[in-house]
Every structure is written in structure tokens, then in C-alpha cells.
Picture (cartoon, rainbow, N blue to C red):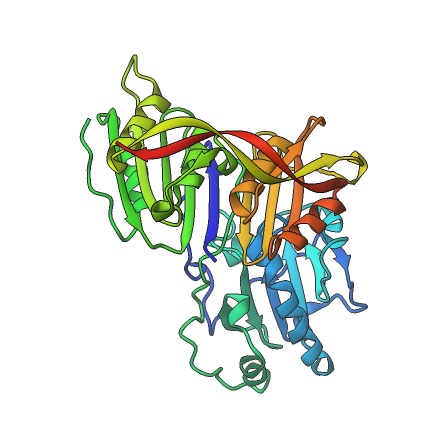
Length: 402
């Protein structure tokens, strides 16, 4: 399952490396807690105990997906005095809303000053990767840094006994995770970091136009949009590109079977005057694929979702203008989305087409289980939707060979 990063209206450098301000064998920066939220200990002095410190966020699907694993570890080491602390920088209201849907056995707390995240990140601007796990011994020294999924019983036992953990090539190198944020000459894209190459293109004031598209097998999907000036995709299917760039849902796009699962890197910039940004992008993609579009209608089976109880919806607490989505395995998080945007993303990421009959304004957050059609249906019902399987005539765009 590939991870997703979706960025709107700004550019960010994607990091999947150890946090640059902390190192194994060095003293741990102080842990600041402004809000104790759940499973609050009687003794809040963390300096006297070994601590598994987990940095997480409500919008981060890989963070949520790691919770059952951390719960299991906590259960195995409950007799040792080891503290498991899940630390975010979000409001208590936002965290408590998620806790109704996710069972954390760890201490859940927040540092809304963000000082802890900065200290354990790059020392300047918070964390560089989510999720991030740090083991701190009872003398306040950092003994392990990495992705929570790599922390296991054997490693923890060695750490508690003061021994070096078994060799683990993943220590200090979190796996690429799904992060979500609220939003001429063709030059070669670096296969090592195409997102950085795209940023360079966008910063080049002399380059008015750029288009590059190629096949890829990357594991992490990144989408970057710059409000009519440029757009970037990595590890994206044609369905994902058409949905994000042209607002055409997968339900309404027919891609040849041979291209259905193919993923692409696409970098595009166009600030040439008197030229339609999206028309030129579409023409370039079709020319690259040696294809054209044809309109049609088809009878399709869809899952029709009708909102019957709007009180079950969770209005976002994101700041205005920020939205995104994140996935990890079966966990799919949507943040700050309108209902129309949410169902576009659900249809993109699910195996079956879900269509919403939507009559509520606003932006909302969702935590969905997409491991099967049944679990996704159950997730949507928990937000007040009824879901019915029906056959409907749907207008579609076909991609066909020239």
C-alpha cells in the first residue's frame, strides 16, 4: 500500500529521515506537556521513568495505524514501569474527538507550545517526519529513534536492560509516512528526488513553461499544487491525476486496463500569458500517452450514500484554507474536506465507487477503514450516512488510443 502526501497551496520538502536535532546516546530534550488528555498517570514526573515517546497527530494515518502495535507493546511491558507517551501539539477538543474512535492505551498528551516537537525535530520548525518514536532511558538519555512499527519486544527488552538493541537498519530512519497538509523547455527530473527538482523549476523565474512525465514505481505518492502556476505528482495513477488536476472522479473516468495501475511522476509549470493552464496540461498528458478523450455513458454499480444524520459529522477544527488526506494500510484520514471533496477522495482510494448525495455545507474530518467495502460502508454509517448499492447511468470520459 503506497503512502500519500497531499499538499495544496504551498511547497514542502518531504523528509523521511531521522530528526536532525536529536541523536542516540545524547541527552533527551525536556518533554513539555501543556495538556494531559487521556490515561493520565498519578505521577506526572516523566524524568524518573524510561519512556517510549511517540510523536503523532490526529490527521496522520500512519500514526493512527501504529496505535494497536504500541498498545500491544504497552501491555507486554506493563509490569516494568515503562511509560508510553503519545504526544501531539493539537487542542484537547480535537484529540478527544479522535479518542472516541481510536483506543489509545498510552498516556495521551499535548504540547501546544510546540517546543517539544521543535526540540525533537530540526530545532527550528517542529518535526521532520511523522510518526516518530524515541526511547528515553531512566537517566534521560536517548537510546533509540525510529518508526514505531520497527520497535518490537526484543528491542524494548534490550533497551530496558541497558543493552544495545539488536542491529536494526531502520533505527533512526522512519519509513516514508503519509502526511497531510492543508493546501519552455522540458528538463529531466531527478529519479532520486523529483519533488526537489520540481521546487527548483517553480523557483526559476526565467522558466515560464515545464512539462515532464514518466512512469515510476515509487512507494510514496506526493501531490503538490500551486494555484494555477504549477502542479506535481509522484507515484500517481491516471485516475489520481485526473481527480486532483481536473476534478474528474474515478467513477467518471475510463482508463484502459493496461494503464489502470501504472503510476507516474509528473511535473508541470505554466505561467505563459494567454494560455489555459489546465487545457495545456491535459493536452500534454494525452500527447505523452498517445491518447485522446471520448465522452460516453455507462451503467455502473455504485454505492449511493445519503446523509440522514448530520449530527454525526465532525466539523473540522483545521485553520481555514488547510485540508488534506493521509493513508496507511486500511486507515484513511480526511481532514478539512467538503463532503463533495471527501467523496471524490473516497472513490479514488476505494475499490468500489461511492457516490454521496450531499446537502450540508462546511468542512469535515473523517477516519475511515477501507480494508474492505464492508468496513468502509460501516465507517460511513458511523458518520450518519445510509449506504445502498444501486445501478445508475453515469456520464464518463474514456481515454482511448489516437
